[in-house]
Amino acid sequence: MIKGIIIVNNSGKPRLVKFYQNVFGEERQQSVIRRVFQQVSQRPDSFCNYLEGSIPEWENVKLIYRHYATLYFVFAVDAQESDLGILDLIQVFVEALDKRFENVCELDLIFHSDRVHYILDEIVMGGMVLETNIHTILQAINDQERMHNESMKKAGPSDSVDLVSTKLGAGRNW
Image 1 (cartoon, rainbow, N blue to C red):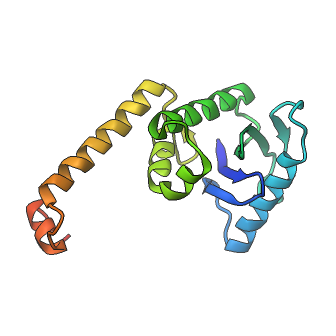
Image 2: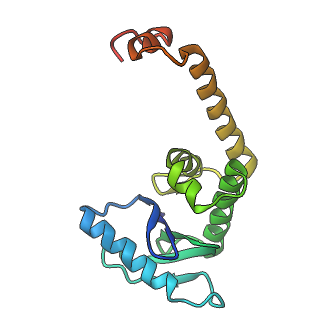
Image 3: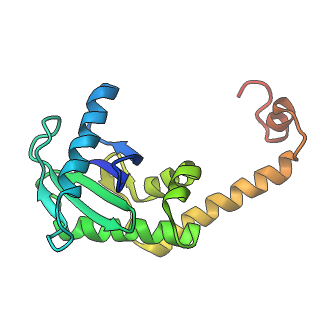
């Protein structure tokens, strides 16, 4: 099971954080992010991309990561997960981001965090892998984008919230 997904830049600033195993409190979450970054950033690029992590909030955790340009994509998983399978999952996630944003960069993660979370939710939900086929993931993303655009056409740019909800069939009880 995946315990958490953390994307940090080379300076240790988190760009995406998703915990699937509870880490209560902002201070403890920041501590986990800091520990994960320290462990992966100190390793030379010539070392393998997985290590046994020492994070008190998670027992028996493996940190599996890839370093792309200025970003570390880190998946914290339990001992039963396949190292190579998770490396492939990271590759699928990055490819989906790359296709969606056309050469994804750190700013895409910052300014389009909602879309990044949607892409991640198409791949992983509740710590379990849902989909690894890049074509299926991209089709779901394109379908969601199409539905969003259609609903925006129905709404119109100057409509009030009440008018939009009525047009979409929600009335005043949404």
